[in-house]
Image (tube, rainbow, N blue to C red):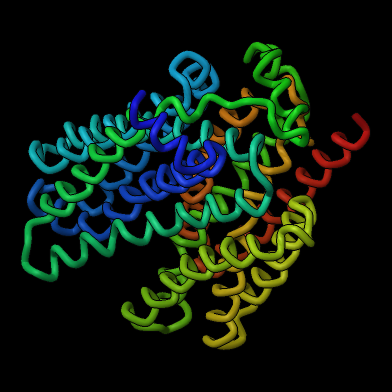
Amino acid sequence: MFGSIALGGFMPRRYLTLILGFIAFIALGLPDGMLGVAWPFMREELGQPLEASGLLVMALTLSVAVSGFFSSWLSRRLGIGRLLALSCLLTGSALVGYALFPHFYLLIVCASVIGLAAGATDATVNGYVAKNFSDRVMQWLHASFGIGITLGPVTMTLVLAANGPWQLGYQIHAMVQLILAVLFFVTAGLWITRSDEHRQVAAHEADRHVTSMPSSLTRLPVWLGMMAFFLYCGLEISVGLWSFSLLTDVRGLSAAQAGTWVSLYWAMFTVGRFAMGFITGRVSSHRTVQLGISVSVLATVLLAVGGSVWLSLLALALIGLAYGPIFPAMMSTTLQRVGARDFNNAMGLQISSAALGMMVLPGSIGLLASKTTLNAYPWALLAVTGLLWLIYQLANRISHDR
């Protein structure tokens, strides 16, 4: 393609694809935070109860799980560039559907399409960066997702503050996604990788000797990685979802105060990824995961004890800071844990498991809190965090033994 050739002559292909990967992850995050801001207006227009948004989230996360499962197969047949172009085209089309066809069951279909696009993009770009770039770059890749998930609700908030319709917010982001689809199509040829970096030789073996998905599913290291991502992503979303209720109903904060501190949780989450990117060269990804889980355990104990409001707020900020680097660091250790032959399949399976964890664990913790008390919520977080620690340690031990 002419565009790919021209760009390739201007800048080394390796760095162009990295920039495109960052752009892909910003695009991946854009739709995720919009629903929370737009839903009060959407549900009023659609005549839906508050909890109906859960159906949209469920449709999206299940689709992410399905797409992640097939991501390795899709990337081999389409190539990374064309897969990203197709993902942005599907996402942009689905967002147009949100804006033009405001009927609830059609929105469920659109949410499913966004999930299908997101799962394949997430797994494929993670795999590409893990094989071709450093652990530091992996942290920054996921920090770029934080930029996207911040820009989405900011845009929607600005539209609504200007008395614009919620549909306009989705139209703006639909246009962005469709423009990016063209960009990824034009630059698709840049993603053809060459074994010109000796440190990637083992990783490229995964492309030449692909293990079947059924075979990968018989491997214990693959299952342990899936369990770790299931638990971690469930924790990440649970804190964002239930901390507001804990702070308002139990700790006595106003809705505005609680909302500010939950926003701080996500801000510290993104800061943690940016900061870890600068020191990853001195701290391995394995140590990053261990440190993140350890700090989150201490911070969760602080949240559970909750001697004062300020201790609760400090705990929430520390949890966000500790959680942030864990997901990209676990992605970076995938090759070490599962080996080259299962690498591509494991990346997709981990994304699928992450999506399922985001759907199952927050609801389970919420059910526990509703049957007991909201004070049980941080203790449930602590128990799941302890289980995550044990599973990750076991996965790491098995990788060393192997």
